Image 1 (cartoon, helix red, strand yellow):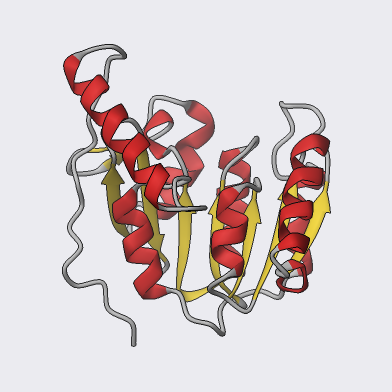
Image 2 (cartoon, one colour):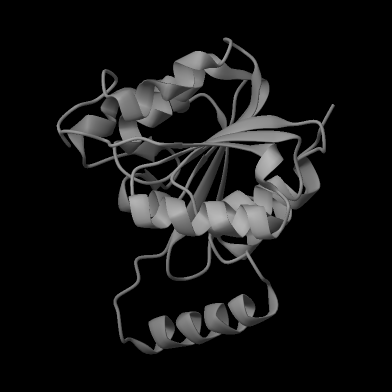
Length: 212
């Protein structure tokens, strides 16, 4: 059994640009990025947690590609990655090939279509190819995040991780999980009972949910 002892939920902060707090946080993040290649896509505490949790045999799914795709491919058995931006897709595929990681990533370019679409969008439904309760992790970034979160739930194993990038833009965590955005209400209903690990770098938040 994997353990998450030693990681405590960190209170999210409301950061106003160009305040001393923001400038200090930004400088600290820039220094971190300089010393950690492919490791500045999530909060440092989230990356440390994931680095200790993920196993070489893990299989997962990722909406929205970038440095995290390479970071994950270096650590797990296989990722299915969905990207909606053709330029980004070309860039990341070239990097995967250059670092000989392309065999570990099934990479798909799929338009997210009408931004009002939800679970019926082809971009979201790509995860339907995965068997129910088969995935060790799902990472959600890019468009249609509420629908992607909901689509992940059935596909994750018990004990699997749902990782939401820049989570503070959508959810609040202060004793209980809440949102001011109506399209996240269903996500809140499903995820409220899950174990939650919240991390922040002073600029943004990463939320990790553990499926019970």
